[in-house]
Image (cartoon, rainbow, N blue to C red):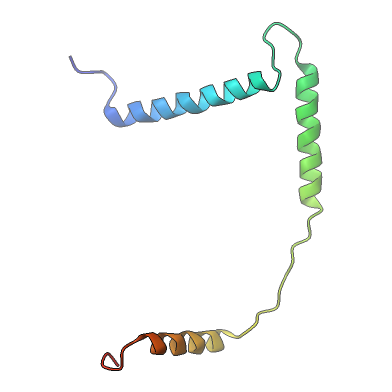
Length: 90
């Protein structure tokens, strides 16, 4: 008997269900309880994300000046390549 779901989508469903189960297990390990109010858990998560975003916004990118021009870099690459190539190939 043939299955109704083709093979490729079945693998996609399996990976989706695996990811979903990992996420659910993770939330239960963090302290989520189906039978109690979980507002404190969500408040901690929201505070953590807020602090993380605030920390990320305070990061200043470091801009470095180029060490060599494009022409110099190209010439440097050609010199390295010439050292690797056999004299008979030239």
